[in-house]
Length: 108
Image 1 (cartoon, one colour):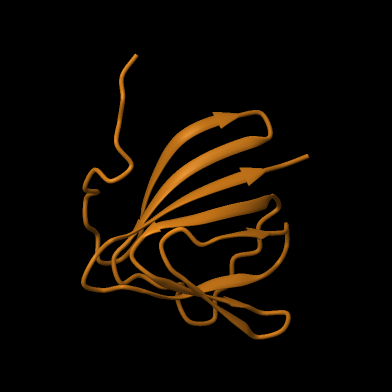
Image 2 (spheres, one colour; image 1 turned 60 degrees about the horizontal axis):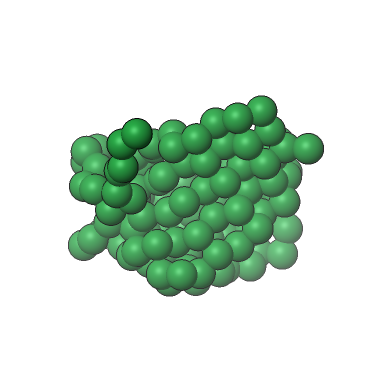
């Protein structure tokens, strides 16, 4: 067995977030996502087939939900359950430091 650390520095790519698959089992996927000033491109929305629970571990971010045009500010420790097919996007993450997320995707 080997331990890893969720805060290990991720390779920086100015064009996209870093995704690290931590665990995948039937009906379950756990990812570490590292953002550094990244946001969902204009006009694009996430529309996922699975429920997604996300927690922000460090940094800061803003999520936008299409249904009611609701903005949600995320700070370390904040978490939210996003139901399947709830269209949303990342409007902002901090540019001067990493925003580290855990995302748990669960299908029935």
